[in-house]
Image (cartoon, rainbow, N blue to C red):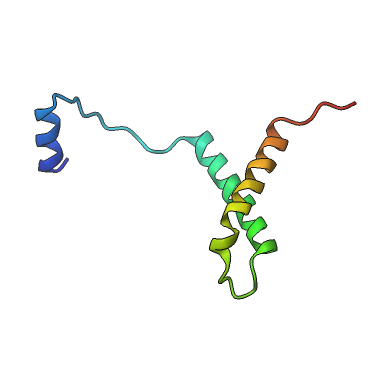
Length: 77
């Protein structure tokens, strides 16, 4: 722990604990989401990949819709 963090934690009486940033379920969901985004971008971004920033909002919205369909399927009639 560097000295600045050490001084801040002492000043504000914060107990600093070490933890691991790895969480298997969240890591798997992030990989799945990134894979879905990559697939969507391959379909909607031009060959030069210069317009990805203008398509980002739509890609994120579509990713959210895919996740909702996977985890909350519509009831059958």
